[in-house]
Structure formats: C-alpha cells, structure tokens
Length: 345
Ligand code: NAI
Image 1 (cartoon, rainbow, N blue to C red):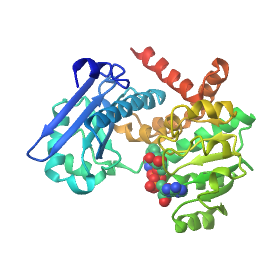
Image 2: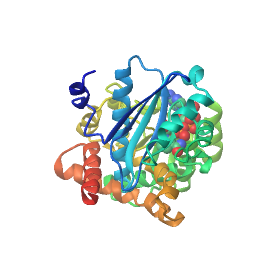
Image 3: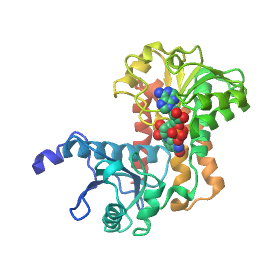
C-alpha cells in the first residue's frame, strides 16, 4: 500500500499514531492505532483474530480505535482512544513468547497506550503480558460487568424518562436478550425497580435462573426481538439491529450492553425513521470503561459511581440534541463526544 493510500484510507480520520509490529521469531504481526492521545494516555483493547488480508486488519484497528475515542469522550474521560490487533488465530497462534513480544512493543510507546482485553484475548493473556509491561494490567483488577449493568440501567431510565416523562420504571416491560454477566445483573436491577421482564438466552439454564430470581417470562431467541414490550435490551452479541430485525420491534426504546448493535451504520437512520428511541451502545455500556479506568484516571469510588449515574443525563442530553437537530441518536452522541474533545483541546 502506498503512503498516499494509507493516509487517505476511509477510516484514517487523523489518527495520531499507527504502528506496525513484526517479530518473526515468535510469529507476531500486529498493528497498534492511537486515534486520540488523551491528556496523558490512550486506552483500548487488544483484539486477536485471523484476517483475510492485512488491509482488513488495518481497517478494523482504525475503526475500533476511533470508536474508543468517542466512547471515552462521551463518558467525559480524559483518556484518548486506541486499539490494537494481533493478526492470527488465538486458538493456535497465541503463545507466551508472542504475548511478551507484543508487550515489548507496547513498552516502546512509553506509556502512551494502555491495553485491555478484547475479542481473542483474556485476563490470563493480560497477566502474561504484565510480566513484561506495566501497561497491560490484568483485568482481574475487578469485574466490570456490574458497573456496566448499572450504566445500562441508568441509560434505560434516561430513555424512558425522555420518551414518557416518568421517573419510575414501575410496570415498564423490558425484553433482555442474553443473560450473561451483564444481562443477568441488569435483570435484577430492573426487577427491583418494578419492571416486567421477558428474557432469552441460548443457554436455557441461564434463562431458568433469571426466571427463578425475577419471575421473568422466558421466550425463544427467535421471538425476543418481536416481544410486546416497551424496551428491547440487547445484551448478547453485536449486529442484532438490522434491516430484518428492526421492523419487527414492538419496543419503542432500544437500550442494551452489547457492543456494535447496529448491523450497519444506516440502521441508526432506520431506527429514527420508525420513531424508535435508540441509546447508542457506546453510551449505554460505558459504565464498564468508567469503572475500568478509575484507577488510571485517579478518581474515587464515589466519583466513579457519580459518573455512572450521570449516564442518565447524558442520554437525555443526546436525545434532545437528536430531536432539535433532526439527526440520529448515534450522530448526536458523536457530537456530544466531539464537543467534549474540543472543550479540552
Ligand atoms: P457474557 O458472555 O457473559 O454473556 C453473553 C450471553 O449472551 C451469554 O449468556 C450467551 O449464552 C448469550 N447469547 C449468545 N448468543 C445469544 C443469542 N443469539 N441470543 C440470546 N442469548 C445469546 O457477556 P457479558 O459480559 O454479559 O457481555 C454482554 C455484552 O455486553 C457483550 O456484547 C459485551 O461485548 C458487552 N459489554 C460487556 C461489558 C462487560 O463489562 N462485561 C462491557 C461493555 C460491553
């Protein structure tokens, strides 16, 4: 790829740093992208997967690191957005030597990039890398699924308030798709707030456990999108909101933890056209990153909780921007994030 093509790449968007890492002795090929440097450092996960081409890996890392900038700025964190990809099959190509070599590449950036786990990497890998680098802290610093669920709960309250001008969730019907770490805790919070729950998980035992605890009605995973509810909460996989599924929604609000809920960028306009209040995933699930960066950013537990509580206000603000300016909630959230970045620069 020529220099011209790289710098005019559709996802390039003025990235501040792009590094290509190769270590043949351990089979390492990786790309590190820093979209925004932040006040003192940028943060983002390490993704390990096979890519059809190096170009596909480059596109992915640029897109993901830019998305991290928006996610962190929308949460008003003084941390920049970054991401890295290790090109290879994590099941067969990951080794302690490869992880150590990658950690040395992170060290070469002198602390400007702090990493976490992402698809294809986990806390055991971070622990392995932390033997070599202080910038790859093991994620057993804490379980971020609970603050993530609390953040989704606050975002959902904000969306209900925006839509119905009511503060209580009593009697609000919510369909939760995916009852893992985040979804199951979210169900507890919603149940305690008086919601009626409809749930599904491909793992029947998880659905049964949530039903036992909350009295939720279990539906099949095919039916959940079309459930007769006020709110649909995707807490399983990405790509769930598509041209096929969105028209089936009975819910007037979508708010959940899953990353990358929109199958394509155009879906945000479709949701707006159908008058569905969509809380962008990177706003709804930002409780995890707020909590995860607490130590690095040096704020207290109570400040962290206040920030997670303020997701309610962030949702209200972005919905008002969307309404007043006639744009989708995703564009409104990106505008909020840009305002924060410009205010700091
Ligand atoms: P998890 O892996 O604990 O739970 C996911 C659940 O979804 C599992 O119970 C799985 O059986 C179920 N599932 C998978 N495919 C399904 C389908 N087609 N229909 C219904 N259920 C299905 O994951 P976790 O940690 O609860 O995260 C949920 C989502 O939130 C993920 O998309 C994750 O990327 C995102 N997220 C999680 C954060 C965290 O702190 N755990 C932070 C930010 C985002």
